[in-house]
Image (tube, rainbow, N blue to C red; front, side):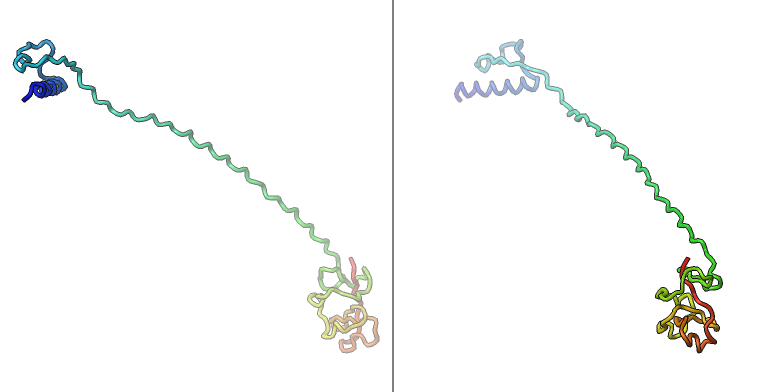
Length: 165
């Protein structure tokens, strides 16, 4: 082997021993170096580095969520009570929403409401009448008031029905 190759091997060995902390140091005797006929290689040794533990990154806590405002309940509007219409006397006429009566308030009723027979007991041909509304003597109602022969099949004409308040 060549001397340079040996020299390289010794240098590698010394470096390896120095790295592990064992073997010759700078103050050691030169006998080992003289035996190999190689120049002395200066090495520096250092203490092995302390293992580093990874430090956890500080966690930044997000701010607590803002409390949701409590919704203010919207008060429901209170309906004003609808005043009940004053019940006026119909003077014996059936109760009805139009105020039709026997009292003489208002005028003769020539055009009663379409559903008047829902409140008054009308004769079968009520809609064929050409006069004003009357009560026949048997209690039925006709639209032939003021006409000759009105209520002829119902014991004759009784009293007129008036429309008005």
